[in-house]
Image (cartoon, rainbow, N blue to C red; front, side, top):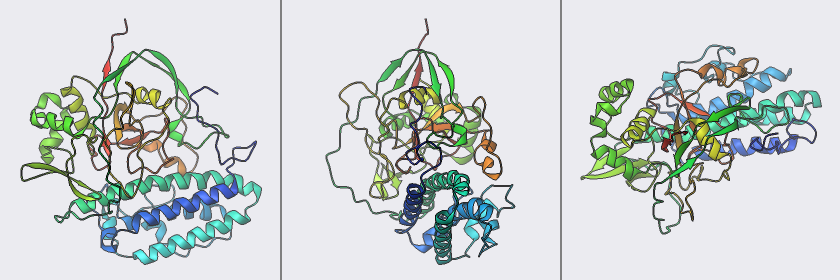
Length: 443
């Protein structure tokens, strides 16, 4: 196994690739509990609103993640299972055409029924039935359903991040700037911003991607197979770009200079009147930022977030740099600890970069997703999984760009160096930022 390969699955039975039954059941319960905890501070009225097609109501997320376990495990593998809510298959199917039709995505906010109480009862019902099925499953059945349960847990973690970013968009439309989650972090002296610098990296022949073998740690199918890539010499910024640095771009007429923008990007900013990141607001000639903790004064030292690919690319052009390729980031992430500022209900916003004693990389994980200029497409040898779960990633390999590293809304333990998030170029409602890269002459 190459030195950068993922470590063996800590949940696996010794000698097999099948997750341990008790450990995976505990992980299932922990994951399900976190989703309910994310919804708990919200009001019922908050959880039924949809402010754009990309945003889903909190209530829908709670139901859909339950539908996933019911559909792909209980319905598919428990011969004694009878659905209590057959209509939910239509209401809460997201995009799995092999399963059946779906309620239109842009209209999810029109579903006043089932009520939140009914959705929470549905969650409890499916959780108990799944735990009973796990307890009674034969070794042969367990080998079949365990990977699906593990996939379901990671799927729900993705929706936990979406629950936060979606409700942030919902609350941002309210002129009262409501607090979604009370901020509970202790007041500490803010560190000085780490000076921006570039670390030069030589050419290399690099093994990237995830090991998709039976005994490997969990990864999504789009993360593999492992393969070699060649990277030319380049330099990578030591940290993401900050609010203050992005503000300089704005004040220099960045949003008024067409030569900085891709053609589609310039059309978009003219069409939608973009002039600053999504949640920035000017109050009495001072910049503020809407957060999940309410509206706050803009901190110039925190990483800029909620940028589209278009905005990240325009800033990089203005700065005389470029966006990294995904494997340039993966290269340095492979050697990083994996620690970072991830989902923490007391502090759901990017933090100032921690101080370092040498010219090394910071915030490679957590805080903000980092745009790359790599298109989200298939690795050599990629094959979608058989059946409906094969629709998870493969069919989205068009008109999307890869992001790396996770954010302050990503559950801890969900991210790894091979992880490939992806969004279209105009997406802004996620915690998306940028890190600069530069080319170096190879000779």
